[in-house]
Length: 351
Image (cartoon, rainbow, N blue to C red; front, side, top):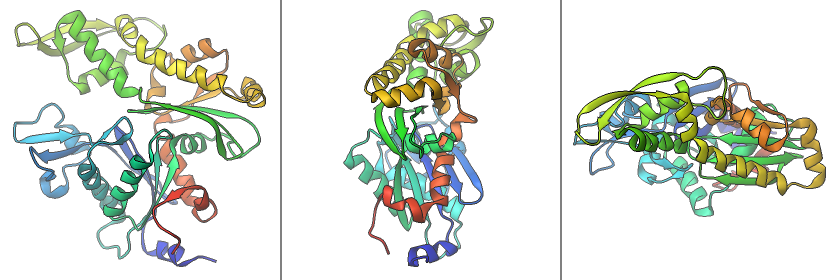
C-alpha cells in the first residue's frame, strides 16, 4: 500500500541528484539522467541575485567563468563536495528542480541527493535545508560510495566485498561495501579540482604563465595522464605572462603534466591503500577476485587504473560511463524508495 507521500508522487516528478562540485546531474524515475550541467551560478557582484531572472545557472554560467566583467561574478557554490555558499546553492537547486519538475506541478518532488561520506552533520543539514527551500517536498540523503557502487553495477547487496574509488571534482570517496552497507570508507578532499590546480601551479612555475581553470581542465583531459600510456603528446596553451602581463602561448607535453599530477594522484593512491589495510581479512580476500572499480570524472584520467593496480596488486577497472555512476545510483534508490527509505537520512517524519 502506498502512503500519502507515495500518492503525492503521482503529481510530481521524483528525482535523484548528484550534487557535485563541478557538475550536477539530475535523473528522473523511469527516464534516467535528464540534466547534466555545471555547478556554476552567475550573480550580480556583491549580491546573491542570480542574473537573467534566476536562469544564469549551469552551462550559461560556466561560459562566464574567468571572463566576467566587474559587475558579474560566476560562482561555484560547492567546494570539496560540500556547500560553501548556502543561498547560491539554494538558487542553483531551485533552478534545476524547476527545470525538471516544471512550473505547473502542484506538489514539489521527493528528492534523493548523494553526499560525500565524510561530511559533517552540519554540512548534511545544509544540503537538506537547501533542497527543501529550493522546492523539494521530501529530501533523502544517500552516501556517494553507495550510489556510485549501485550505479556501477557492483553486487553491493551480496555477502561479498565490492570496492569503489569515486573521484569527483571536490572529493575522492574510497569504500569497501558488503551486504548493502559500507564496511570501511575514507573520504579525502583531493580530487579533480586538485589535478587542475596542480596544472595551474606547474604553468606558473615552469613557464611564468597564468592560466584559468577551464584551460587547466582542457590540458588534463587532452594530454593528462597518471602513467605512461601510448606516445607522449603536446598541446599549445594560452594564458597571461606573469612578467609582461601580456597574453602569450607556449607548448606543454604530456610527460611534464604527468609529473605535475604526481602529488594529488599519490594522495588518492595512499587513501586506497589505507582503506585496504583497514578491511576485514575476509573482505580483503574477496577483493583478490573482485578487484577495484573506478568511478567519477577522475576515473577518466588515462593510466590511473594502471597506477592503482601497480600500487595494490589488484585488478582495477573503470566503470561504464564513470561520470554518471552516482546519478544512476540515485535513480536506482528512487526506484526502490519505499523499500530503502529507512536506510537513508531524511528531512522529515513520514507523512
